Length: 235
Image 1: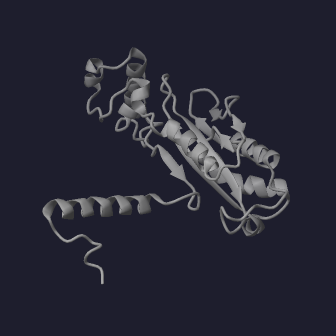
Image 2: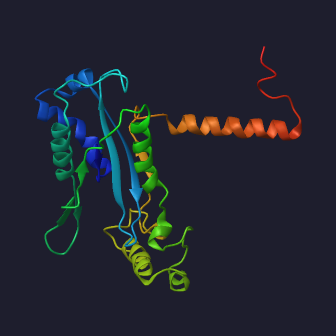
Image 3: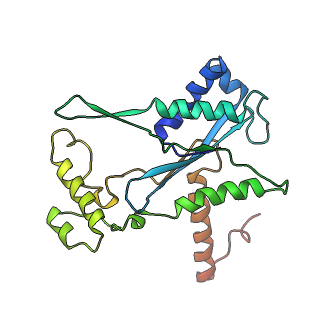
């Protein structure tokens, strides 16, 4: 299932799903495993939005099928309710405005039309990679921190991005937003989160990937220097 929703919605999803099924969260964990991978996308207008791939497995993971009652309609309804329950209060002189997910919430199943082994994984990976490869430069901003507000006028950016960067500096100077590091992340249009997050059991961990990359680089370094490789030193 793919959905355009944020981390807060995903964190609330297990409780909402358990309520839809009429069971406790503890019972939900015993019956199935809910996993997700989320990426942030920078569209041209600079307003970050999110894409998530959400899956239901049996309690033992991807090799274990979930129960028959864990259907696409049940998951879709739970996602919509979880997203609708997330709100952010925006202080103002008038009664506070609460920002919520609007009509752009899009929830669709990722259907696989072939039984070729591995095609589902490839399709999901392609969906996530499409947005993971789009950085802040897609919004025509810069890839480095901006230290002083006067420097904004000299940036090689679009006028729309320039106004959003200015807004980060201005809001950072107000009492309501002084604790939010908008100035430090003005070059990212105020967004300071990692572009990708996922649940613990969705796939391999970032730590494991970093370990493999470090081992690969170390092996390359040993080969360039003419040292024994790790394979040749094993007993």
